[in-house]
Length: 384
Ligand code: GLA
Image 1 (spheres, helix red, strand yellow):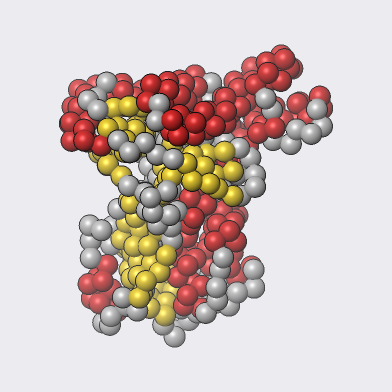
Image 2: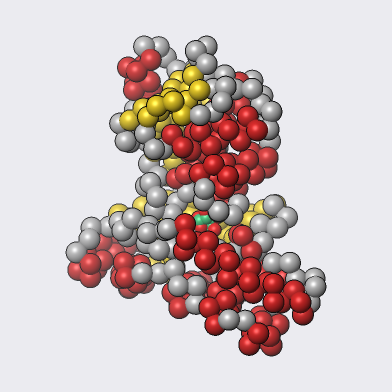
């Protein structure tokens, strides 16, 4: 943690906090946009984290402070509505309102937050914030939440009150994260299993430092075109409910019935979903040549079929895939800028970082950030 939430809490509220809550960010290793198509994602909770020092208060207000942004937010615990403060308060309000909708009675708390998850760059900073807040509200208001309802309610907070029509990937990953585990999430069954990991490899996240230009409309457009394809396919085979149910053979047989745009989006999702299975197998075998090839197909599909890449990402892909120590590289998160991800040889992290930084700077003039990451535990609370 790069700032001291404990001291900040003491300074702000003139007392020692009772607890710390922590949530990891996440990076997806395969399965872009497959979540809302009920497919699979190979995902990894990472040790870039949000931490919050907190204590219950009896004022009926939720008082929050962000050490990163140096701003305060206040909410009414009874209604969950923001009474003052910065825009990020909308996440807190969304979480509180969903809990209130579910019949929970909330009491107030004081909290100071600090995050090492770069904000808005595709590593689930908002899902981590929502999950942290939900865990804190349960703790301070005296109720227990299981992980799955917590993930579903966090997703609902984002969908209904923040207004982002996301799938379950982010919330599930940050809540269910376990140390030393990369998981394959089944977004229909809402279950996961651990995938094996080749000992010599680690994950490096490369931040293009081009803020994600994710306008809700671009994400929603892609969702709509996936749904459009399902509407056509379901008339041919009524067992098809989502693109997860469509095989690539079926797709090629019937793709002429789709609009050109819908066909491109659907092809990417069907192939990307198949790649999650291929990745699981290649990781199990430790087949590095195969990993490289699968990641490459994922990136070119994201660029040419799903069209979620941009100039910064294209340059970053060049920088990552030519750097010392790289095994495989692709996009991460929703795309449209933000972070990308590489599998690299553990003993080459420093050389990889240097090469990516220099090449990307030469190509774009932008100084990027590179994080060598480890798996991390999902949302949890500890006594101070
Ligand atoms: C964002 C959304 C997720 C998922 C990814 C793309 O992170 O919040 O639900 O759709 O994009 O895989």
